[in-house]
Length: 182
Image (cartoon, rainbow, N blue to C red):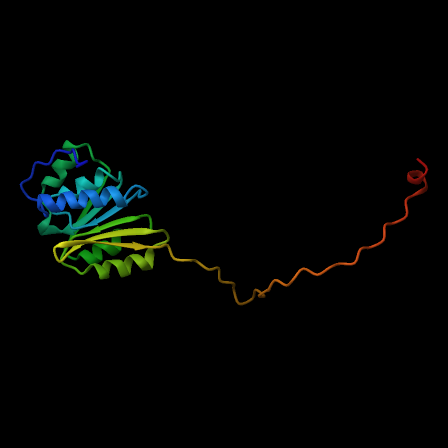
């Protein structure tokens, strides 16, 4: 297990077997990721685990479920790159703090993951990997960046390319007297 940070809380949202499974998933899925968004902070155990793989983590959770230990964990482990937000409505928090900069999302909460995935699809401009813990198992969803098309304004004329037409060669102009008497 690559996790080597100090965790001082007795609260964990996953048992050791699931933590090790998640660790293997993160090792496999995060090498190209640069910014993580976590839904479901709890005491911050998975937050620290994410921070071991991705050096930019934002986490959100309900006010009453976040342990104050997360701030201690950030300080003890010098993980100042973790941002945390809480509030009464996770979907509202997600909408407020999620941007298209995030390329890895971890969801572990009582709201169905498809609600977050639908919101991610609306904002995404890059490939996004979503790992969810629902029904006592992990699922991985890879969302490919949408293909963007350029739309022209109504005043622009649509030009369709045609086959290249042969052009007739124009005869060379006669050389001047100076040039021809070399």
